[in-house]
Length: 175
View: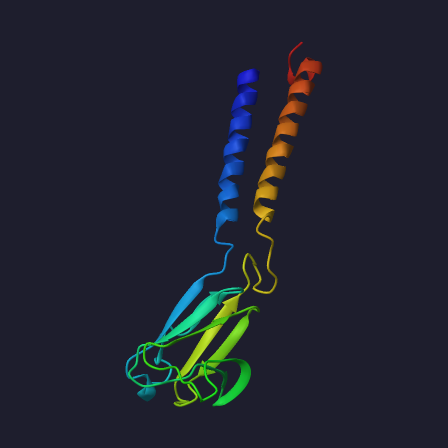
């Protein structure tokens, strides 16, 4: 009987360990790179690469001007800023090889454009971390807690089975 228990506990431990690595997916913010491409002032939705930009809540998106012309990164649409982020107040433009960064604190869709060349269009798509529905973040500790609960319940079930088997041998067909 002890070898059966050892095998069962081992299998449960393997199952629990398979669940635990999920919790070690990056819980930290990342830096997402976007380039303003060469010749961007004559482009539209292909002026920024990648476009759309995919990020998670807490990530920082950094735009680098790889063009020879100054640009801006201004949130909004139809050449109308919405005030969420702006690389320039037109006193200091995003010069060639210059960078601008913005950290996204909420999930959502963030359209942006160049204030100097309003046909240059981009979008940042921000999703919530550890969320199945894209709205609420889930605490990253939840996965190890679930794995520990499964392990504890399985061990308790094995112990209960062992006691039942010892105390009720007739139940299991042994007289």
